[in-house]
Structure formats: C-alpha cells, structure tokens
Length: 233
Length: 240
Image (cartoon, rainbow over all chains, first blue to last red; front, side, top):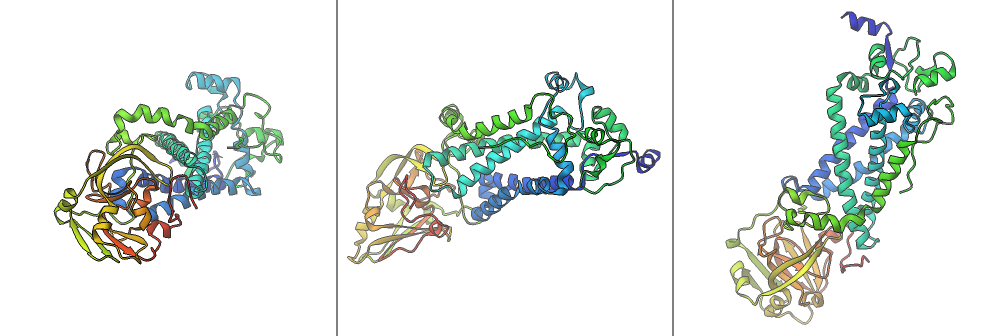
C-alpha cells in the first residue's frame, strides 16, 4: 500500500508510451493468429482436425500482411518519436554491452540501459525474421509466375523462419512471465524508479515527475535537451 | 532482401549511443535477411539429413522438420472424408456407352499399373520418388466406351467439394492413374484413400483425392482449385 502510494505520487518512469503499447499488443494479437493458423496449415493432425483449409489460409495471409503495419504506422508519424528514439538506441552496442553479452549478463550490468543487450539483439532478430517471412509468404501466395525451384525454396525458408520466430517469441513470453514488473510496464506503461535503477542503470531517466504522458515521447524532455534524450536512450 | 536497421531519428539529435559502439543490431538483421535470401540452398542437405527420420508419408514428429520431403495434408472441407473400402464405389459415366460402377475389389482385379514419380505441389513442396499403383484412367474410360462427342473428363470427390478435370487426351496418358496404393501401401484416408487420382506430370491439385466419379463431357467446367485461380492446364514448370 505504501509502495503503491509512493509510485502513484510520481516515482514512476514511463517505459513504454501509449503508441508503443498499442503497437505491441496489436502485433502480439496478429502473431497469435499467425501462429495458430500456421500450425493448422503445417501440422498434419491439426490440418485434419480443423479442416477448412481455404479459410485458414486466407486468415493467415491477411494477418501476415497486417503484422508489420502497426509498427510501420507507429514509427512513421509525429506520434512515434519515443518509439523511434528507442529503436535508434538499439543498434549500437558499447564495449560494456558486448561484455554483458559475452558473459551472459554477468558483467557490464552498469552499462545496461533501457533495454539490455539481449533484448536489443532479439528486436533485430524478430524484425528480420518477420520481414523474411513476409517476403517468402508473398511468394507462396502470389508468386505462381516464379519457377518451381524458387517457390520450393520459399516454402523451405518460410517454414524454418517460422520455427525460428516461434522459438524467439516463446522465449519472450517466458521472460515476461518471469519478470512481471517488465510485463506490467507493457500493460500500464510505467516502472518504478527503483526498478529502473536496478535493472537499467544506464537508462538515465529524467528527474522530473512523470505522469502518464501522451505517446509522443514528451516524457523525455526533462533537463537539457541532450540530457533528456540520453535519459531515454 | 534489402533490409536495414532502424534509421537514426533526424529530429532527435540526442541519441547518445549513435556514434559509439558496434552496430551489432544492424549486422544481425542483415545476416538473418541474407540467410532468408539464400537459405533455400540448404534444402538438399536438410532433406537428406531428415530422410531417415521423416518418412515421406507425412506422419511422425520427424516429418515436422521444415524441409523434410514429406506430404502435407490438405482438406478443403471440415474433415477428411471416411469411405470404407467395402462401401467404396467409383462411377464412370456421362458420354459413354456402358456406364459402370466399380467397387474397390473390381479395381484391384483390373490390370495393374505402377510408377515411381514425384508429387509436386503448386505451392512449392515436393516429395520425390513416390511409388504409385492403380489402374490406368485411360483403361477405365475405354472399357466404358466413350462416345465420339466426349472430349473431356470431370472428376468429383467424396468430400463433396473437390472437383477436377482433364482433357480426354490427357486422361489417356499412361502416367495418369486411378490409384489405390501409394508409398507401397493402400492409400490412407488423409492421402485421399481408398482411391484417388494421380496425374504424374501435373501439379498435385490435379490429383483429386477421395475419387468418386469420372464423367465424360464435351467441355470441362473449372474444378475447385481452378475456381481459386489455379490454371486448368497444370503441367510442371508452367503456370498459364
């Protein structure tokens, strides 16, 4: 109760703004549709139990085309500033972060920012896998003018990459269950300042009181411009 | 696969990490995208490695390994039709002098034809070297005595939805079978048993499953998959 009160009184830090959360859950929903319909198309026992192949196929294709749309929309407008800033911070890895990766999280903790190096790599891996799945999926659906060998190859790559992304997402869900505070931040948006300093010491969050901010990254404006941006790196 | 990592946000010059550290994110992204573009080169190796555990029949966990040469089971209705061999009938009718209803045992007693030939799906998967046995479709048609005006053959399936067709000339090819065996055993329910068509030189959708009737007509109506946009002429390597 006391803790909740202190959090409510302003010791909260926005980890994911509204745009990011909406994007996450829209993408997650589409992912589950894809995983289910994909399994029905792929696993013989499910194909027989569910049947209706054409309907399942249409839903799968539709969801597959749609899955990158939430992210695309989220990062392409003025509402996506916070999102873009987070994404831009994910590409580069400092020496400390490389050390963190090499030691599997044992060293370099003080250099871990808003997202740890594992999360950062995972982001690019899932993004690339989804893009390849989209490309090969389009070939499977509309690539009938292509040579048989190309379509056979696309089927092969699509199947393996689907397995790959399923493994990564399963790991992601397990990590979320193991870290309820992080999961909550994807639902409600915020984490406590204490949590942030413990799990993301290099994430320099602004000292200004942070309330539920509109999803435009405005929460990063505290202090000097440079300092504010660094805060959310 | 022209992918690139997220671009720095021009409106936000304050990203501290931009000029420091290694761009491992982008490297990983490009590596995976490249693997997507060229990963099909591994197909042969995967098919060879998984062959001992996969089993072309499509059953078993090994067959779930992507790239294993195995069948995928399609059904366009709610389930696989169940037609017991004892109650199976194949109607040959339409523009013929002697319409006939074949039982499963009748087909077994008819001259047997065998061939080993791949099953190639139009969507890209392929099972090489499948053994097939049955009766030549041309023999069944000739026994029924087609009338001169007959030019095509329509097929229906026990699933009530699947239909297909061939020209009379195609139907007389020696590699077009009314098949009751595949992979060295009676055709299973999932594979379209007890009796299915096998049209060796064409994409798999031509090989109608749970074959119910063979009807000679003047001109064939488009079949089920052809109504979904697939061509009536389905020779391998061709699409239009």
